[in-house]
Image 1 (cartoon, rainbow, N blue to C red):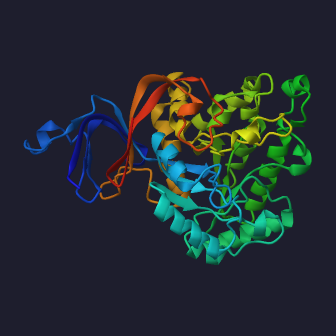
Image 2 (image 1 turned 90 degrees about the horizontal axis):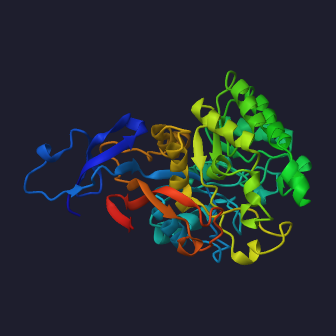
Image 3 (image 1 turned 45 degrees about the vertical axis):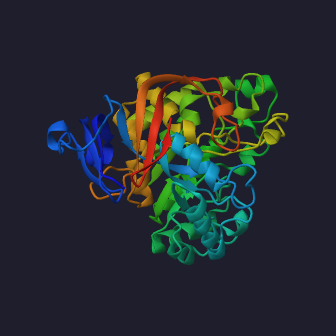
Length: 428
């Protein structure tokens, strides 16, 4: 690999507090040699060729903390190869995969299989999670210690929530003793049973069973109360309501924890469901506009630490059903950054803050050395034309499943190039 020079770029790297016009040098080993305003035409050998980015933006490769991949068991929905292609098109170079596969990721042999498949088929960095409980049944804990030694970065039941309080306290104690990260999908299943959309005017209008926001708040309150006694690394996977934000703001004064939010809940509300648009059947559900605005305020008040895609590919047969029968979830890893940039363009959130929640914050929570442009690190980054307009078309989605929640949406800002370890793996 030849040394590469990128000049005249807007570089945003929250981890290193860089937000300036400058350049990036990648050495022969795919590592970052220099970055920032000190890298310019006057400071590189005159004989070297360089790429003038004309003030396009360079961001660290995005770290997506919540991605569902179909492998093993559901390869017809998504596999490591198609996930990589979709992620690279969105500037995502590292993903945290959920354990909801067939078989479930709950033992070391499945972890070995995932690592082999990821190494052989994936072009991006794969960080697998394991389930909190055996077979996601919510009764018996998995072997945290053994699984962590195999490279598991976090434990979660993915789409499921630990309902048993005694079990949750045991999980937190073990997580504390072994320094494991717990990621909880917050939803009381008794309150949300049979629910499909947010409980309110829209659910009544459509005649659909609603999911009340209190179902989320109750689990958050319970877990954060337990956290006062078992101070482990704890992360709320996704929040969706103003009530949850109020609880988080209060509890932040007492205990340490982190919080994520889906880009869907930041960008859409329950009115977007329209006349039974099943591609917007999500978990947590889209809530009111007031809830959406409270999530944005939560980010600006440092109450939310991470933005995720909640990428959950589903084949069309599972979505082209009645709302009751349709599968939950949307494909979103390749539109995560462009959709997040919408919040910058409309003045809701500053650009540096958005990139922080997509790069350095998730990496810090996971304790991985990604999401930054530090000298000596792998050159994982993306080049973005943040002002270029484009329209989302599901037939152009690179994910194997085309169930995007924002088909035909007009966006501003597109990834033009993505590099992993200094190698260009995506170019528009």
